[in-house]
Length: 119
Image (cartoon, rainbow, N blue to C red; front, side, top):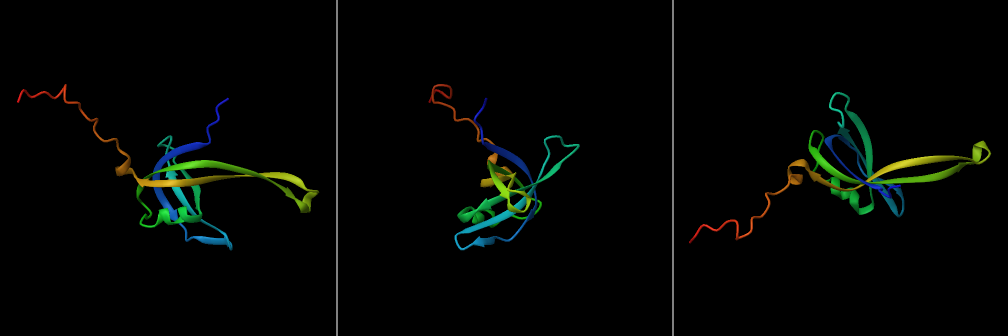
């Protein structure tokens, strides 16, 4: 079984919300990315950034193509109104964003031996 909890998504920003101060010590900022694993059926997926990472969304706008790195988070909560029945919540927590044009691989460096021009 794989122990992967980090994913990378490429897509187009659909919406960016303002940062929310949830508690005195916790803030988050949500955004939606149109993700098209199958271009015929694109998905609009909500992600969040937390704490200082909220500022990573500054300078981005709807319509921009980006690549994001995401951790999958999950937690259990016992509902006191339903005999403490457990419920589970998942969050897609982004921690890095960059413009899609910045993610294209740079040309491979060529070593001097293969570039010998003879002078």
